Length: 189
Image (tube, rainbow, N blue to C red):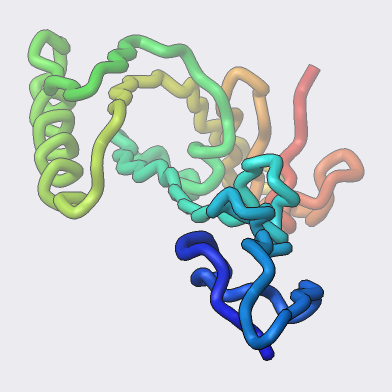
């Protein structure tokens, strides 16, 4: 016959089944401690073995994205992808939480494009938090060369600090071993 032990603790005051309680004439001979909590009202966590280490966690994923808008002024007849792939001289650079449009450039068109790009960027990404903005003005050197070969007038471009060559109508369809049709470009020394 089982009797109730002291109240409290995770055992709910019941004596665990493996406790050996001797009864004499139907009465309990004394108090018996719960084997789960040893009568303290507390028991050891089975998950962390009483070391109080966190075994559960919440995962937060934050995605950072660079939203880039650009404009190429004075299109030289060269594909824009080639102009974007080379370096030039940085004329202006501003990095702030909120950048301001250019106002003092000698070409008014640059100032207008700067203001419109900043306004477009501000309106397009309203649902994003902007941590920092960068505003740069680069001058990419581009030289267009017109030549005549075998009485046919042709053209090619030398562009960027790397001095890459774009010759789409080169007569041999190979530029010093580099295929200009594949967009690799050649580097002049």
